Length: 89
Image (cartoon, rainbow, N blue to C red; front, side, top):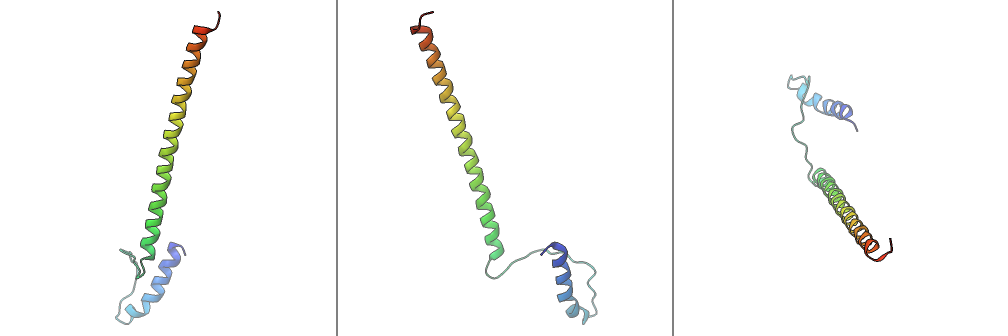
């Protein structure tokens, strides 16, 4: 359900009740949404956990890649030193 459908449904459900009081709904703003079983909060927590997990994975992969580059550079410098010292020129 998109935002417009939700707004139409709210207006459809609420209009008869407020209409009996002589009130017409022209526009409205939703200030808070909640449910008794905390489904919406759970969705938010799950999304937050997924974002944090993905960020942690990204950091770990970046650190791994940096470590690999450092090791490769060190290995290349050792090989260059070995070649310069022990191989005939």
